[in-house]
Length: 397
Ligand SMILES: Nc1nc2c(c(=O)[nH]1)N[C@H]1C(S)=C(S)[C@@H](COP(=O)(O)O)O[C@H]1N2
Ligand SMILES: [Mo]
Image (tube, rainbow, N blue to C red; front, side, top):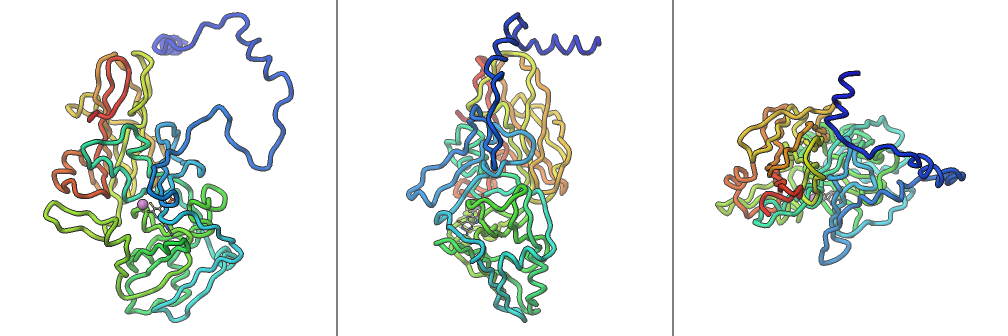
């Protein structure tokens, strides 16, 4: 009882309960409400939405998950980020085929019905575009967490292990790569090393308890745990087994890292540990001093998140955040920390460590090593500045 009353005083929230408050709220809801529906939408009061980046052609755009509004670790399918190079193809699943050929003993043509008869697996996994946070390399960083870190989302994916289908086709011993191709207009292709293809890749048809969304690759996509989004070929129609990579557009001119010495890193598939504070974050504002819950998301392509540290003073001192269970490998991990804001300017940032011992670098340390030529694979930390009037911006603003 004592503890409860002291917590009350700490919060100082809410208006006093006067007569009429309950009665007024009651009037609108006394009549019968909306009826049942076959497929529901969220409350019309909820406005959280993807932000879409303008591109030269509308079918080659990206949309970003509103991480600032997210709760827990799952991304609703309707808010999953989208990235496509030639629009969303309208595919009838009854007509869709997956062809597996090349250096195999038994070439296969599989229907969706064939695939769904095979043993399946479900995994909660983060998917992140290799170009996520690309703006952080530049002098002018994006103003909020959605635009700077929002090309990452976390879903439960269901599908058939690729290793199972490859075993069925019988991979020849001299084969070392699988070339995946999408059925969209650009016929997007990526080369996947055989070791990864046989490890933990999914031919996914399910997302968050239902079929994939059209934007996510309906009816079939690759899901390559921990690897840059681009390799997760959507609308998957072909797997060609070969002895060399195809050096496709998206692994030569794009998704490579141009280093300061002019050489480019290629096939940098694995996404490194990353984290970002989602509250307080750029564009938000604090209502006044007192208690808040600082929160954010951390993830790593290498496995589990082991630790997230928070600084409030621009990196001079760090404290450990609480990690919400379950901490799944290669999934969003939610972190939280109760925070009493004293009304003074603060510089807030998170730093993640994954189970391999890898520590997320600061933006400055990353730019020191990799230069500024690269648009891809930015995993540096993100500093937010809280002003005395409660406004929050990125530190560079
Ligand atoms: N066929 C095909 N697959 C594709 C793409 C595409 O344009 N076509 N975009 C890739 C890129 S760049 C990313 S980041 C992810 C995005 O997946 P999502 O739209 O489900 O978030 O899909 C990848 N797979
Ligand atoms: Mo991407």
